[in-house]
Amino acid sequence: MVNMVTMVTMVGVIRLQWLGLLALLGAAVPGDSSAAPAGPVPAARSADPAVPSGPVPTDILTGTPVAAPRFTALVLRLEGPALGEIGPALALRLPDLPIVTEAPPGAAPFVFVAVRSDPRAPARHQIGVITSDGEAFFREVDTGADAPARVLASVLANLLFSIAEGSVRPDRTDFEIPAEGGASPGPAPAGPVPTPLPPQPATAVKSPPVPRDTPKPTPPGWQYGLVATGVIGVAVGAPSFGPPVNGGGGSLGLDARGPRGALVGGELRLLGRGAEDHRLVRMRLTALAGYVLRRGRFELPLALGVTVEPWWVSPVTAVTATRGARPLVGGLLRVSPGLHIERSRGPLRAIRLGPRLELAGSFAIDDGARVVGVSLGQGDPNRALFRLGGLEFNAGLELALWFGRR
Image (tube, rainbow, N blue to C red):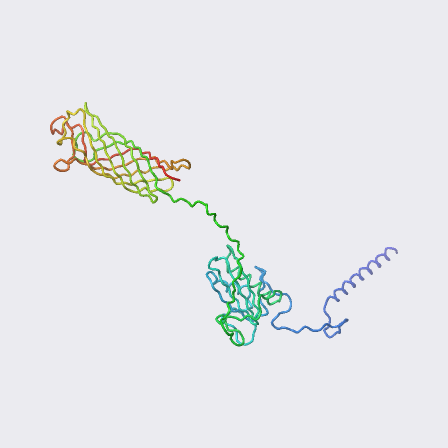
């Protein structure tokens, strides 16, 4: 019996709770509009068809207002490079506000917008906004490294919404819109048309001035190279006086390289060879001109040269094919590819190590150009000991030390 009473009581409580919840829901649902309100009715606010009621729609991506409800059109003027994308960017943020080039006819409210870039600072921009009733607003925006169209369009959209909402005060009132940007309502202003963008104080941080005592970077100057080479010479082509190897020796030269790679230099070379009891010594003087190509750690000097080469044979009893030991004169073409190793300290700037390849030609002047053959018998080529002149190929190993001012 007790249990039965308890169950009836619980069912009654649950039914009361459901009735209370239904009563709360019924109170939240608006009733008949004909019913009189319980309290005094506030004065009705005059309806403004240009200002929509409720929350202002915003751009989901940027959070900026998508409409300026106070205006029916936007007259846009741009002055400066990289500003052509502001119109499309504004259209995305203000889809309900037409962007035109002339003021709309009649007395419809519109807004005039001018954007100008500072030619001395491309990231600095001036904005002027003038409403059709003469309120003027001026701003200066530094877009930095961002895209100017996107930043300026966002600033303009926020400023237009604040103007339409009335939450920002104008910088000037009774301001006339320039005639070339669209005629303003009423008679044209007398006198010169004022510019919509008065000069504003610069807000960007200026870079500190360079101290006067700051040394200027020194342009690269001439470099000087001390060049040492070990070389072997080989005779090429006719006539075949003596063995093909002309001898071996070394050279010491001084090169100068200009800032753009021009090369001039000079060299002294000693070349010797022995045969039986005789010895040939050749001393060659060379003047060079050419070009030095550098790419990273690779260096390639290319040079043309003229040569003068005295020579002698000992003992002096050896007979030559000309009337006396006349000097050889000629020229050469030289290439010396090598590894270029830079140095960071001291006057020594770099070291080059690599092969030297040289094609040279020379002759003695004795009733014409002659290749000299030195023999023990008078004019007997079968007993020739040495050959001097003609076409020769020289090869060796070269070491160059480059010096210069840093």
